[in-house]
Image 1 (cartoon, each protein chain N blue to C red):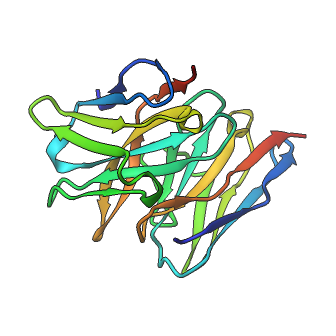
Image 2 (cartoon, rainbow over the protein chains, first blue to last red):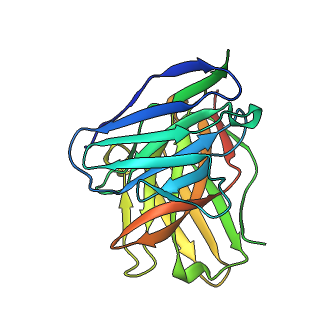
Length: 107
Length: 121
């Protein structure tokens, strides 16, 4: 199975900060990587697929990059609605696997 | 409106089975894949199963093989996930997610709101 490791597991940031979350795959997955946002008590929301392509309706403050084994999700200017847990997921090989999540909290 | 509507919460005894439904609306159900993902309380996301619309194949997470069955009914645009021999560690919110094609692969672009399944005696 491909292991997905996110870092950090949690972070504290202020409104307006630039935030970067990293995701590392245990083997190469080309760009078959997605990012999701989840707020407490709600379903995940799809943000990015193909490592860097924004889903329809996702604001441009979110961006993704990477290929192979190393990927990043960046939020350019953190807003109150962005405080949530973020997950990466590889869809290159079965079983599809998720990172353990990164919780973004208010400083 | 494009959406996935899931069935309501369930409480089951250990050893029982549960069947969760996911009804799609607002799009051509037969043109997209569908998957099941679960989340235990306070934990991360765990992929369970995937159904491809192109060849009808279904793939399951190995740890659930033999206990989980995913089916689809294109006449009602509904996907089902049945989990048998329930244990306490199957207590989780179960999500369905729509799969959209990326090259020869599939990614999730739409999620249901989730169905809480509680396994307790």
